[in-house]
Length: 86
Image (cartoon, rainbow, N blue to C red; front, side):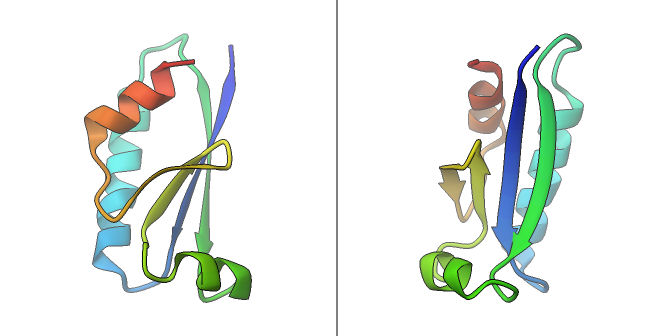
């Protein structure tokens, strides 16, 4: 069984970040048993100047294993497909 790392980059008070978090939670909860193990992490652009410089216009940003999956609005079907593609 593989392990995938899903990172949400955002900031407090960002309604799109809240929406992205809800999509991630919903998709991960609905993955089939025996699928990949998902490790989740949240990072704030307010805590890291490099993240701020790189992503301040794109938040929320979702990374899968360190690679940008999507930003702004996260599509649940696209995220599910990406997580199960392994």
